[in-house]
Image 1 (cartoon, one colour):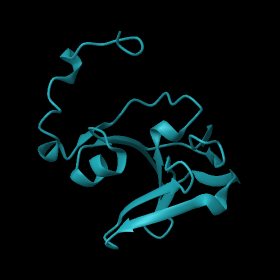
Image 2: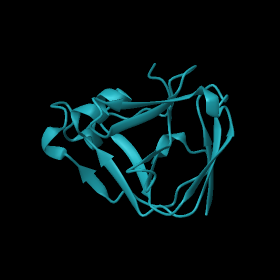
Image 3: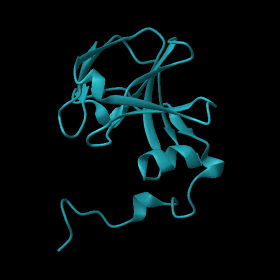
Image 4: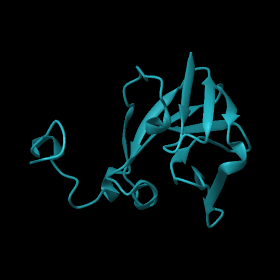
Length: 133
């Protein structure tokens, strides 16, 4: 498979060639801080290849306390971007950064014992097709 993606401002574009083995929704505090949301949605691959099509010099990578919680992002718009971890053996791709549809369903929710207190029964919350009026 080939997946194209990029950042919100469009200055960083990338290509992922290969397959994803896992797709996790992580509810840990660090992922919630990274995303500003209930969870991170990341795809994982040990075999795919990442190619920066444009804007590679605009990508910064943050490794929280050198402990391996790693996030790459565009310096202009802050969008989450792919990164390589475990000495290049594992690619982590934020699912929302992809422009190509992903047909893989999430493998599971992880760190659910650390999820936000308001992250319960969200499927029951009212839904709007756009901004509420």
